Image (cartoon, rainbow, N blue to C red; front, side):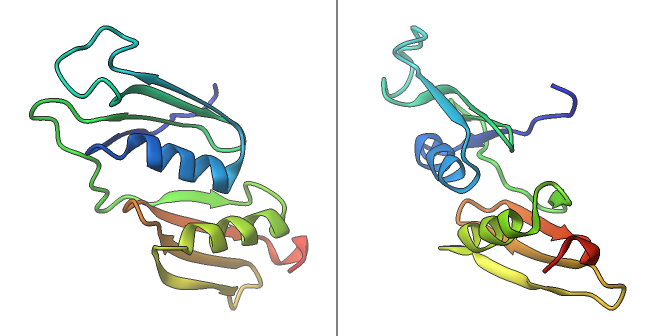
Length: 135
């Protein structure tokens, strides 16, 4: 692992969220429940630890006790030049389903392409690629 990996806490939606991100980015998803970890203080099916490993790595869990769920303000996850333009366009489209396109994926005056989308779980993504990479 060469970069920080976001560890996201969801209010009872960790399984849904991580499965959604796997459907967008691909990769391998491993979900461990609270029951599996011997944590009987919450729903046995709640996620104690989830790992998405692939082109985009994410960790996630359901909140416990007084933990607050993820609320990303002033934070954007950047996928600039992270994959081939065709893949990035697919990711942008998939992330926008049930979410909000904040700035459409479009060519910029300097020749690169980018756009911003807030997905259905509240994460904001900046996705783009260089103009020379092909639109």
